[in-house]
Image (cartoon, rainbow, N blue to C red; front, side, top):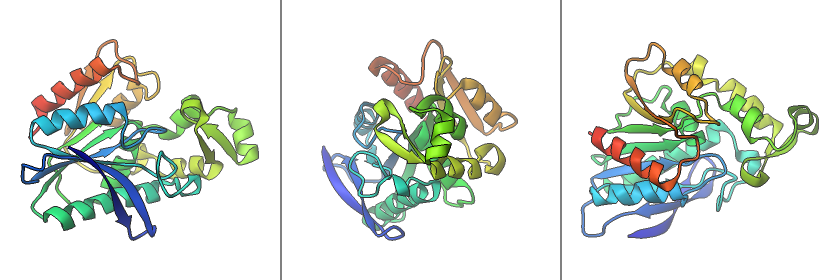
Length: 250
């Protein structure tokens, strides 16, 4: 079953627009939290395919919209790392308040969502059952400049704003780029969590070389590479990645 819910964000005093995938016949003991990619959202094809497969295994899932995405109440001026992290924190608070502190929480984060999740994990002492990253955007600032901007970087800097993402759906202020510089995962991420990464070898947005650089000397992170697969996976490629993930779940 699926239903839409509002999750209150105390920090931002707004409602987070979310979607829940669940079986009302089962007690909710395991919950996956989805963090979507840039210009995507809580009901993307990737989220649907993965959440429905997880539901077959008894996992409830909650996906939500980051600021400036899909149905979000907050616009581009709130598209910052810290505000996005507050969204994840609010979803986790909702899960614990609704289903109890003993519920086991996992993450499935895609591209930009993986970048935000990794920032959230810095200094986080909570335990999570599984952390799955698909095509993670570790080098988010370069991805913005090289892949997402629909204008030249010079014009972006001079004008203080530019269209970005698929069909230029989002207008990002220059402060967003500056925020990405401040939150450079290569410099600030020092955690030792077990993480599974699934990524196409031919990823043309979040380059596999950026992932190699990030996981260098991090034995706790496992990378599974999919040959011939780019950043935007086909439905069949998504299904393949899900089965790989399922075989690794705790």
